Image (tube, rainbow, N blue to C red; front, top):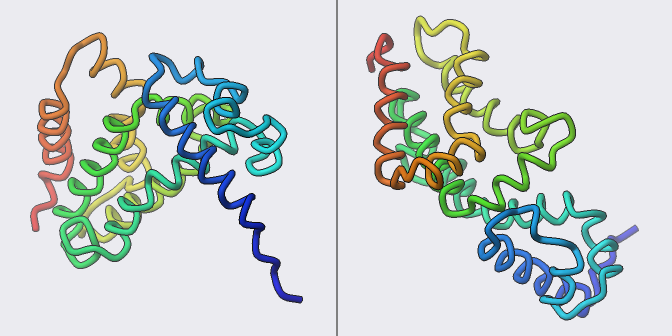
Length: 195
């Protein structure tokens, strides 16, 4: 049985909802301030349309996050080194962490909503496992590296959306400073394992 193509109006509505949600999550001071009713009104659709397409608020946030992450994930899976395959892990790990930090800086409220909305906390978010598995796999390629599972968790901890938001907001750390500090921290973690 062939899979049915979505109706043109469903595709158009989905695009409108994602664009509206993207704008709202970017413009609001808090991810919690964005409601399904707000998104529906901004997209010019009914709330039922959003629920049919995405299931719930968490589903909408996941879908929007996937759209926003697509370029970054393409660069990681098929782009040139050091972000893409082919670079030694000691070069690629800092590049991947920098790309993740940049995504969270550019999408602070969306990243917060994604991590806050995960059942049982941010470590249960679908994307957390993806990032952890990628880092752990690269860490396991470093000769002599031990505790790659824990090290992957520790490296990801410094890119948590709530920490990024706190540093960028209350602490007023600039994106450039955060990127530099993350690179320095990662270099210290990887220092015992030279190329």
